[in-house]
Length: 208
Image 1 (cartoon, rainbow, N blue to C red):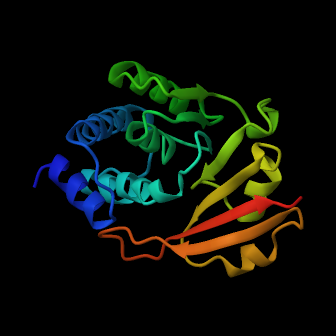
Image 2 (cartoon, one colour; image 1 turned 60 degrees about the horizontal axis):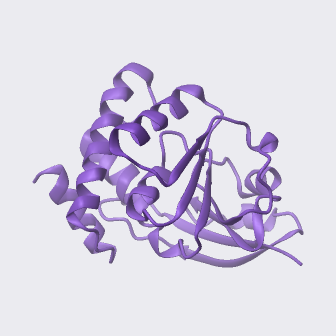
C-alpha cells in the first residue's frame, strides 16, 4: 500500500474525507519530515509507517474539533498537529509556535516548498508571545501536563475560544490539578487507526 493509500484509508476510518490534493500534500510533508529528520532529529520516530500512524493520523484525529478560524499550535515541534491541520484547512489561519529553531526552520521550508499560505511560523517561547486574546483554539500535543499548558497559554484564546489538549490515557490526576481559571468542557477518546494505546482530547475553556 502506498503512503497515499495508507493516509487516505486511515482518514476515512476516522470519518475524515480529504481531497486527493490534500492527501498528496500530506505525502510531500511526510517526505520532507523524513528527509530533515535524518539531519536534524526532529522526531524520535524513524519508521515511515509509524510516522503516518503516530504523527499524521494522530493529528488528523483532531480535525472535528477545529470549528473556529484562528488557531495556534503551541509547542508544534515539526508541525504536529498544526501543519497537518493547516494542510487540511486552507481557509483557516494557523500559527505554529515553537522555541526550537531547528523545528521552526523546517516548518518555514515546508511552507515555502508546499505553498502553505495559511500558516505563520513563530520561533518564540510561549510566555513571550504577544498575540493574546486572539485565538479560537489553542491546541497542543506536546505539553507535559494540562496544568503546564494552561499556565503557559491562559491569555491566548478569545473570550469564546478554547484549549484543545491531546493526551494519552485519560488524565484524571491532571484534570484534578487544573487551576480554577478553567473549566473542562469535554473529554473524549480519540480513535486513531493502528494505535493500540489510548488517546484522548481534553477541551477546556477559561471561566468568566
